Length: 91
Image (cartoon, rainbow, N blue to C red; front, side, top):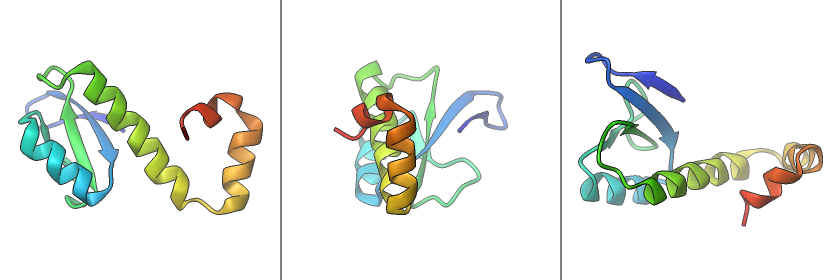
């Protein structure tokens, strides 16, 4: 989810596994607990910050996998069958 904080900074808020989010927040000051979200699961990345692009891409892929795996098997199949590109994000 893309948005802004109260200072007008652009944020990308992603759901990540709890342990991964904690590690990333300790490593990168521009990854913070999710802005206006449940802080354990959600992490906000300051888009103008110093998070390396490969880390940003990894976070997006991990967030996709995290949410996808919580869907029902039926919904997972529907997504994979309707979008061949969806399969790439599950590798």
